[in-house]
Image (cartoon, rainbow, N blue to C red; front, side, top):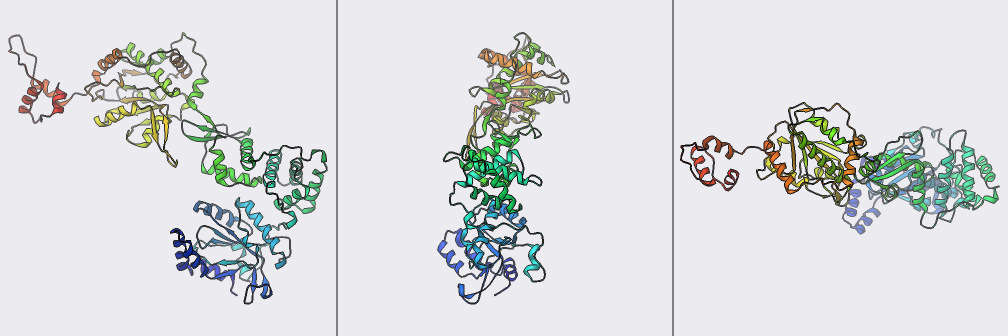
Length: 630
């Protein structure tokens, strides 16, 4: 016989590391036979029983009020989460990784109101096992119910040894005086009907909706809970057993009185609706969520959002995070609803969360346009340009196309509204003000890399994309941007998503530049609606309701927001002032002029002109240069 502390110290110090690491390596390679052979060769110890020689009943020499609990088949994330709960529990003496590395060994003190003798081992084990299962929300291996159960040594530098029990284990002190004792979970209290678990969870949830289990209200809570058990058809003995296990801080006689009082209402027995076959745990999770939260699936962002339903809760919807899911799961465990975290995650990320489109929701909420007030013209008047009428025409088409692109999956806005002007006159600010306050989260301002996945996803995630200082883009980048502007769908895999999905394009583009010469394509730039802003009034509040009500009405009435061939010709003419001059063009005007009245004209092809320019400059003769020249 050896001291338990000595064995645990060796496990933490790596005394058995070589063999344990070989075992884990075999498991990683799928060689279970070799792993089992190595495991059988590891030293093992008993926690509860002491023997002289063989592990036989007649060789039993002593009994410790300690139990070993096995948690198997855990992921790395499960181990981290469960260890935190286990190490914080009042009954935990020690906790360490299993030899295989995919489980936990938990040594607990049997704090049960029952004499710690071998004959009571099964009751002690069942009571502590049930308490930890309720705490952790996972199933615990029942193999530890044998007092002589062997525990193989392991290797775990993070082994936890509770300082609360260290003096007692080393025979230098007493047990902690604040250990809450549990009522024994006797065999007659354990229901053979596995379908009782969801019924108890349902009764617990319904009782929690009306009151809380807290000081001053504990007896009433147990009574309310027992009333629901009676209505659900659960037997009184089953209910009392459950209460003794779950509400162990309440004296057993008080629990008995509360249960008996609830079950005097014989006319209510079995009257409450019970879940149909197949509901069970999923229905319990849904009921718990519905009582406290409103969930929705934001189809634009591709994520779940939540809102508290309580009067004093937060009223805005925020994205679901791991922190929120973990908090809800803990609240469910405290309410007596046993489920695994992946089960909660599956319900949250299912059709339980109804689809919500913030764009269609906004436009559907707009009042009808009065048909007379030209809100778009009033908006156009806040920017002074050298072509005010054409500016108003293009702004009107662009706004209607923006609405169409946002709410109709069959429409795209292929035009970029581009504002040029001096630095600091408010171009970007004016563009930002076009977004309604309720859609303020769906805007992006900055430069884009059209080849990146994140930029492509912005086409689906945003209402407006504002390209700040577009003049810094190269010709290749502008060509990529043109391709991006004309896309109607995006197929990408979001971060942490399992598969790639096809997303609808919803975003429309604006751009701002300080340098007016921004266009590089000599063949035409019909995608860009370019205007020189001579002055901008960005302080007057934007009437979003009026502007978008009018744009929506125009779209639904069949307004032509696209550009015909005639319109495109006018767009290209308007964009000539914003076209960058090529080196070939600048050199041509430097070395050639229009013939005078008495000059003999020269008739030259583009190649011949380029050859003469090459004689005077270092300009090379290429097909691209010839095309640029003419």
